[in-house]
Length: 200
Image (cartoon, rainbow, N blue to C red; front, side, top):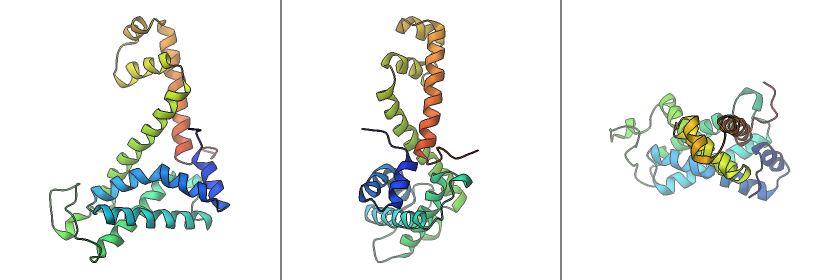
């Protein structure tokens, strides 16, 4: 699948393109659902909370409420999602509140972690999702041997000499492949989180 930066999708969103809405939903729905579930919502509540947060996100973006120079998209999505979860937890009509997965307590008042604790959990979920999407993209972009060298050296901590021997590469080539892939990964992460093209 062709890689599209989040910035491009957001620009398309301003033009009211339905396909941009669908692509953004596909891109962000998974970590938002996981987060809602971890904070104690049922599946039905989680689906509703995500939909509400995404609708608020789209409206807010079109109204100019998101300033990319002030932070990553993930941070804004966290605020919207946390507010949505709080709203749905207050709605006792939808479904019983589940025990939260961030604490051992099962009381109503302790079920929703405070904002800072929830933010930490969100950031872990967001990073996991972002890295997964970027790694999938990288696998389709780079030489398979170079990607394998990157995996062995960076993710599995295999020494460069062993990687070089295993893959039939020079030690310098292993380091160069690792460097290029790390730089590309950094670029992809920025593009995924909507900060590409923003001056630092």
